[in-house]
Length: 156
Image (cartoon, rainbow, N blue to C red):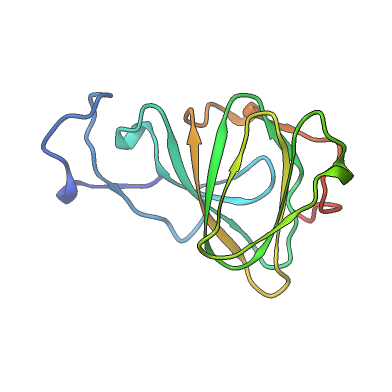
């Protein structure tokens, strides 16, 4: 888990009643996402966030995630580094009706609740992005495996 830097504490109490501080990214992932990507937790209940959470996601070069969809959580992504492709598809649409989009640093996108999605990193560089979730990530069973994705077989 990320540590709180107590030298940066806010003097006001957050809504959750705990200390508000700065979370710093660890070199090693905190966990793996249900889709197989690496997760580094940044902001959540421990840092005073009560209606959202924030993590950094990394997918190693050349890798493809498992396709999933979320029951309740909407995600907003902001690409920090690397290149890749993201496939998103509404529940009522066929896989082939949803073309993937290429992403690069500075791009932002939304993963709506219930939409199937899958992503891949370019062959020579990892894909790294911030992922804002609302509501906060509830539990591992939030992400449901999708039967198929638009980027082929997963590699993670």
